[in-house]
Image (cartoon, helix red, strand yellow):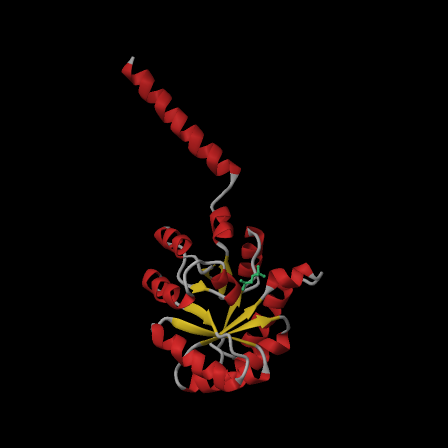
Length: 218
Ligand code: G3P
């Protein structure tokens, strides 16, 4: 399973890329709206930093608008993946963009049927939102598992991006559920490194080393 960062913040992406663990980025209009700079300026900077897919979402809701925005976004960089919501006009746009060789990530997926529709339209990626399902008392991870199984069963090519990840346990769960990718906030990626026994182990190794060194010098 690949790890992506779910952010439009260039500083977070620059930092996480240094750690060598992420190979893609997803954004959405809400994440872009949190930044001071215009998204049109942010997108090329993200693509310069990350050697992998960068999802950028359309704002239009009509077919023509989505296709035209999608083409413009895809022209920014070969790694740009156009993000389109699961609607009838959206899937019409996916079909057209896919025919032109433009990769699409279908977003706001909350059911297996929506995932099926996206895959049949030609989506390269499908994004179930697990945290938002958990929020309303459903099991987001179960949806990821079901989508992965259905895609596999019917030999559909789309990759599943588990999105709306809220904590490290979600990452483990979607990895076990067979997601191809987990996209997460910077804070969750940082938390993934942590365990109190790791910190305690580093401290005790260092203390033992220093004690032995001091004893040898006596
Ligand atoms: O990639 C989609 C994701 O950003 C949604 O996350 O936490 O707003 O549900 P959240």
